[in-house]
Amino acid sequence: MKKLFVLAFLSIALFACNTDKTPELQQHLADLSKAMGGAAVTDKKAAEDFIKTSEELAALQKKNPDQYVDILLKAAGLAKTIENPIKAIELYASILANAPQHPKAATAQFMTGFIYANDLNELDKAKAAYETFLQKYPNDELAESAKM
Image (cartoon, rainbow, N blue to C red; front, top):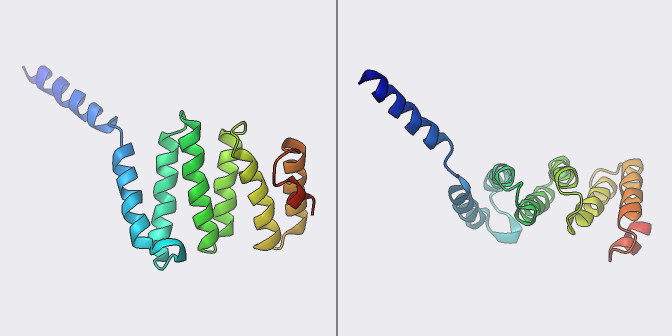
């Protein structure tokens, strides 16, 4: 009987650890989105929490590339908005590493160059990022901007 109880307890504990946190994280992001104050982002702490939660949710969505990429693009854009360009580049790099064939990967590559050039003034890295963009996505609508 004691072994049966222990086995049942372990089964419940294992099941609890494996429950899908996706709905909870999505709700948390919705709440944080309201708390941030819209596009102007009046609550930087909420924005930082939004980025962290987005990373957690994206990790759960790796098997769904569209959701994975959309979540990280939004978080990267927010990181840039709150003047955390290093975090934005890190998030764009995650997209490029984990979903390189996704249609929006071009945006991640372009934005990497844009941030290096305009936010970090690291022109050598910007040039390299733009050259990579032009090699991989020569027909993208952002190609002309990358050439400049």
